[in-house]
Structures are given as C-alpha cells and as structure tokens.
Amino acid sequence: MNVFSNILSFSESTPKNDVFSVVSPHGVVERNITYELLMNAVQNIDKLLSEVDSGIARPKHAIVMANSPEWVACDIAMGVTHRIEIPVPTIFSAEQAENLIKNADSVLVDDIGMAVMYDWEKKWNLGKDIKKVYVDSNKIYCAPEKRQSVPELMEASLNVRLVPEECKIVHTSGTTNNPKGVRISQSALWNQISALKSMVPGYRFSRYVSIVPLSLLIEQITAIYLFLSYGGCLYFPSAGVPLLGSKSSMPDDLIKYFTIVEPDFVVVSPSIVERLHSIGNSLVDPSRLVKTVFGLDAPPFIACGNAPIATEILTGLHDMGLQVYEGYGLSENTSVVSWNSPSQFKYGTVGKPLDHVTLKLSDENELLVKSASLYLGYTATDPSSCVIDDDGWLHTGDIGELDSDGYVKVVGRKKHVLITASGRNVSPEWVESQYKRLPFIRNVAVFGNDLPFLMAVFIVNRGELTNTEMRRAIDNYGLEQFSDVERVRQYVLLESNPQVRKEYITITGDPIRPKLWERLTEEFDVEGLKNKSGESISA
Image (cartoon, rainbow, N blue to C red; front, top):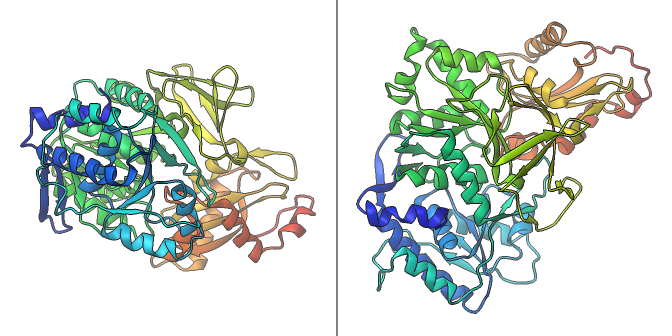
C-alpha cells in the first residue's frame, strides 16, 4: 500500500461518502464528488494517459490546472499507476514553467490550464509540441467499461511500465526566478504522512478547505495525503477564486470560506494568521473569534509555516481560543521537518523534529537534517542547491537554534546573512520579521552587505496613511526596537498591488531579493555608500 492507494481504499469502504465539494463565495455548493466517483475518475484518467504514454517505461506528466477535485484525481491516478507527476503552478511565468515542463510526456489541463498553456507556448522555444490531455469534469466521473479494484489497477500498471521509486518532481520555492525540480519518492511520502499522523493521535479530521495552491508540496502533503487518509471531505473555492500566493489574493476573500465550510483542519499563511488576530481584536468579545469566523464551538487545527509570526500575535490568538501550530520544512525533505503539535508546543519555535527526522547544528549553526524522507536529487543544480554530505546529512542552508528541550528555531538563510562594512553579521529574515509587525507592511527585504548600515524595500498596504506617516512609523519603530546595527536607515516604499506582487514576490510569499536589490539601487547610490566609513545617514 502507498499513500495513493490508502486514499482509494475509501472507495470500497465508504463509497457514497463525499470526498470533494466545490463551494461558491456565497456558500452555494456547486458540486459534490463521492469516493466511488473518485475511483471512476482515477480509472478514466489512467485510460487517457495510456493513450499518450503507451510504450514509455517511466512516463512523466505535468499538471497545469486550477485547484479542483480533478487536480487531486489526476495526482492520485498517477501515483497509484506508477507514473511520475510534475505539478506546475498556473501563476508561473512562461520561463519558470518551461523549466519544469520541457521533459514531460504530456500536460494534463482543465479550462484554466488550457488558457495558461496557450499563453506559455507562445513564448517557448522547446523545439517540440507538448501533448495536452484535457481532463473533462463532465466525463471522467462516468463509470468505466470495466470497474477495477485498487490492487487490480496497481497490478495492471506493473505489467506495462517500470516502477520508479520516484513519484513526482516538485518545484523549489526559493527567492530566485527559475525553480528547479526536486525528485520525491513514494517511500518519502509514506514516511512523512506516518510521522505527521503520529503527532495528532486520536484526531479524525472531517472537513478541510484548500486555499493554498495544490501545486505546492505542502498542500499536497496536508490536504491530500494526510487529510484524505482520514476519509474526510476536501472543500474547494469556486474556480477563479484567487488563492494564497496569487497576485490578486486577499485574506478576507479566503477567510470567508472558513465560515462557509466550518473546517476542522486548514493550512494558512502568516498573512491569514495576522488577519485573524485583527478580526479577533475588532470583536466586542474576542473569545467569540472561533464561533464568529469558523462557526465552530471547538477550534480547528490550524497549521502555518513559511515565515515567523510575532509571538504576541500567537499568544493573542491563543487567548481568544485559537491555537496556531507553526512548522518548518523544505522540499528536499518532502516538506515537513519539524512542527508544533497539541502535545509538544513552544512559542517562538517551529516545534520538534518529526519522529523520522534527526536534526543537528553545524559549527556555523546551519540546520542539518537526516531522515527517511530525503529527496532523490534535483533535475538540475544551481548555486542554491542543498547538498547531502558523505554521512547522509542534508545541509539545509538555514541558520537555526536548538534549545535544551529539542525545539527548533529558524533564524534565517545562511546565504542571506549580511556582513556590514563594519564586519557585523545580521540575519535579514529576523529584522524583516520584526518590521512586519507594523500593520501596513506586507513584505520587506533587507540588505546590508558591505554597507555602512541596513537598507530595505518595504512593500506596503497604505490604507489611508500618507508616505510621511508610514516613514515616521518605520523610523520610530526602528529607533525603539533595534540596535544601530540592525536598524534600517534608508529604504524604498512600494505600494502593494498585483503588478508589484507578481514582479517582486514568489508564489510562497517570499521576496525576490535580486529584483528588489535592483529596485533599491535605482533609488540610491549604493556603490557610493559602500565607500563610506559607517556614519549615520538619514533615511
């Protein structure tokens, strides 16, 4: 059994239960899909792909589709029939997508994916046409000519193709503009899900709302392989609703789905957590937050990662009755490395390592990981690639701390550590996380290598604030909260809008530092500053 066949087992034990539901922003259920229909779809997708990859020993197929029941059906169909899947975000640029798709045997598309592919292909120069397989939601749920059991479906695939340990190629989510593929194995997925389930013993999750793109590995891990292993129902916003990471995504538009769906499990971004805190503070009785937003008497399980959240926000939500569990992971470990849980929790940390993960610090305080869910390698390497040393330790590139109780704290990226002109080391991620406590700052990138002081680009939601008011708040906050070494002295303000987010922010919400550095150098004579001795210069 693997994670894919484990989910399909519910098509035999609870065939009439709903596995998917698509809901409009007004709470109207547009369609429901049962586990029995999911099994139909898996068989029909297998048939569609067999028409494309017949005779290919290790076929690779990309998915370019919106979040939907059909996306998950394609994922499970490829996993259970031993094909290699390449999930591709629909918001990628043509250049980013080409890097992942160029070696695929076909691309599975829906209506949105077809339009995206049309736009990408006009800009590609692959020297070949990419086969597109249209996944028609009106046809794939029909009963197949001959219904197969899960073991029969798996066995049939063994007769026509090799069984690779590799089951998917996911993109990295770094701060550069060209992602590389990370090769993930079946056994790594199984070890991840087994370890995650052991962190929440006794839980039986039944309702999950997916607001993170399924093209991201963390959402595949949590929404599909972890959540559906409980036999629950996965809810999707209507097609076209902007998800987290898209240029037009707004927290309130996604939070309304919490009220509609009443989920008991959801993965969110720091921006959603911060907005929940604001909503709670706006209530006459903040202890009514869970009932007001989620419609529940008991709080849901909320997981969050990607960037640190201010402790006062987390403790404030806790006082309102809502606990947020922060974690840490990277694609090279098949996502999760450590996670806070109901039984093991500490503020200001990303929890303890999962049961199958061993973690230690190098002499330079770099987090080193050894586990049973490490990746198989990259499709291509570049200077940002992680390395597994001769002793089996993955060098994550992240600077961290381990306390005496075994809890992990991530300080920043090793390659991002700034060395100022005065020789002082500064972690930009820590400085950035502190400035993001100002309510109007949405993103920030801090720079300082060889400079007499720190500089930054702030991406802001101004609301009714003027530039002068925002600058005064940033300057006063810097004087109150930071030492002279850590305080940002000069900076650029950029208004957050779809074009700015598309140009300067990755799909996972990280700043694209090279581009933001270019923007900073357009405003300031950086080379001239590097020649200064370190005197204070007013912003």
